[in-house]
Length: 81
Image (cartoon, rainbow, N blue to C red; front, side, top):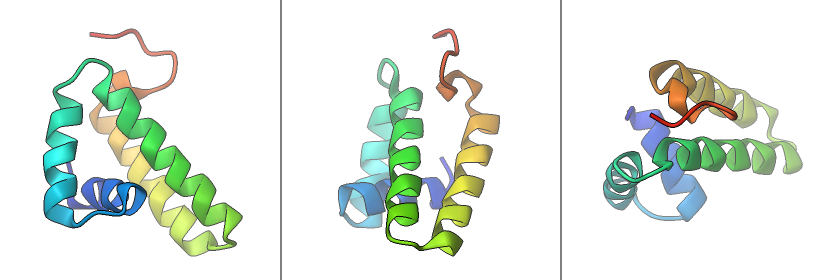
């Protein structure tokens, strides 16, 4: 996972980057983990929009697009590997 993806998890879980990196690794190796990470990033986008923080929502959307490109199995409706 990229630094930005880990930062999104850190933001969502309200933990530091090191703990978020460990959580990310665990999630990516668990069943439906990529889908869960995708859901976390989407929730962060919704939170940013709710707060009116459009620049942050845009940044997170870019993170989401890259995550889906790197892990297509994370897309909603994707067949699990």
